[in-house]
Image 1 (cartoon, rainbow, N blue to C red):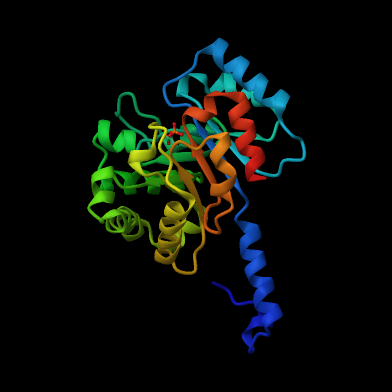
Image 2: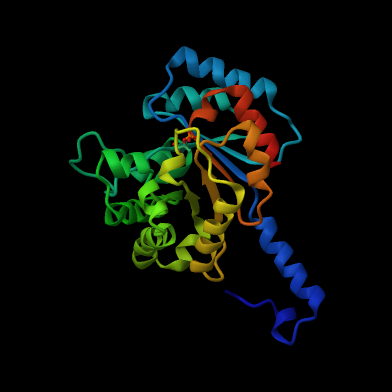
Length: 269
Ligand code: PEP
């Protein structure tokens, strides 16, 4: 990191506080809605129109929608010049070639995606994506000039046996080894305890904060945004967002309900 000249001699406390504030400002709150394999043309049009009608124009939160690939064109047209941006739910680790059914980073970039989720637990479990696969996808996202949203999180069994931080550290470690810590300057990490995703059970703000602080400590002086994901709803979002290391949320179910989605974005503001 470049040290500003005003910090090269012994800094006064006020100067250090200014630097901390600058770092925090960079961590603008971020809410990402992962539609998974939900929606159709009619549903998407109604949902986006409801979200944009309810949108608070003062809201400063960065907001991303990740629709299924066939609806990219529709979503890009509907979000238009609104504050919403588009992301993707996964990516191929390859840049091009004979990989039937896969979508490359360049294609996502052509479609005006800005963020790409990698390592979602549903893909780790159901598509058998390993930590090594996830690391390759993380690299592919960055090669295309896009921002990876790296999902990591422990299962219920791993939490109950006291291994949550070890598991999360190992998942993160694979990507750090492949990409280097500096790569996280342009990345987002999403802590998603598997037991909380789509189950209605949410980690308490304290449980989530403990893991977020651990992730941040593993990344040293690089301080990416770290989102919490796992049954975030309008009624529990504000408490989670008050924690010092929680920079927003990755949403599944709540991203499909306009009222919930906008209320969560308002809570992040
Ligand atoms: C998710 O799938 O990433 C997720 C957080 O889902 P839900 O909000 O429904 O728990």
